[in-house]
Image (cartoon, rainbow, N blue to C red; front, side, top):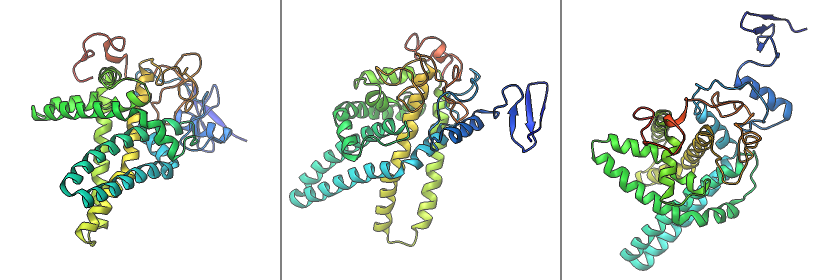
Length: 340
């Protein structure tokens, strides 16, 4: 027999230690509700069933728990993500070696161009892979993922080159402008691959998506940066006794094939959360369906699916206040108070 004692706020403590609501007798908090829903529906870890949990406070940060969600998604589909990254890196490395061997310096130059094309293909492919597996299963294999990403190479290349130029100039100008551009333009690849925008349009759309939540986005990237630094230190300590060339090769392989997919998952999930927080559809032509079903929530509303991150969009207005001091896309890009 389960005994609960309800306090004046309506919450009750259960004899077995779980905290439940005295009115609805459901686990307190979004994480507990999500865990219960997964047990009841048999959904795997990293997939949050729709229709669970309580509405969120509209003051909550929509990026709360995004790193936990990205890690759960990455861990569940690590083999698929790493296969994509490793395949692209391997093909690029082999072609570069052959070009350099056959054509010398000119071949090395052609290899550099091919390497850039491979990098842009990998960016698009990983974002497409994250979009594919958000429903908890892999629908596109390696070949299908690369084929789906191929049409976006041109737009991703143009946008990435222009962004790199702008951000570099910004860093030269007292660093701060570069950090601002890096934050506001960080979603250009998901805007192209998932949102269907063009190369130039992706800049304004990324800016509007980040606006109102820039500090949250910037803080998330800082945490990721610190995690990567710690990981690099640990990896360097592990590989310390290996020869220099081999150590550099292993480090580059880990950074490219293992770390890059996680970064793609973080950026893609930030895109999904913030577009939903702005009341937009993350994917053109997709209604707001259950989490992982290419949208959030039924009937064009914010989703009813509670996500375990604690600040996921679902069951009400996600957090951070009203974006950008008004409707997305209108007014001054810095509306809402400076870097916001």
